[in-house]
Image 1 (cartoon, rainbow, N blue to C red):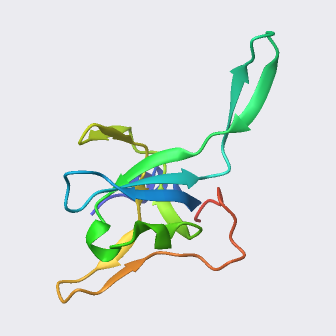
Image 2: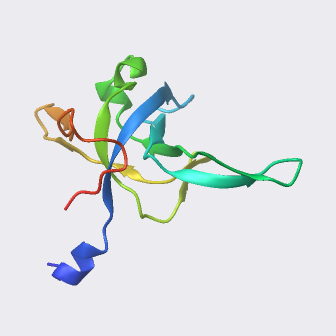
Length: 123
């Protein structure tokens, strides 16, 4: 059991999968590029600032369920977004995909309805 205060620290956001590819020489891992409607500021050569989209890379062990990772592109799913970055097989992962499965092979991504935009926080 954890306290409500501990649970409240977990940031859960909707993210739209922009790309998905199998990580070579692994059985389970996919590299996802995910849009959470986040921006980062960059400094251009002339010294001016510009705000650009900042999708995140997330590594997920769901390859067995998606022989063709391209079917994930365009899906909006729920992710934990405030975990410390973690290196997995040489790839930095900046979040965790929410999914459910059971021992009989059932599997499902947690997908909000179509009205939920990337970056929306779960409450």
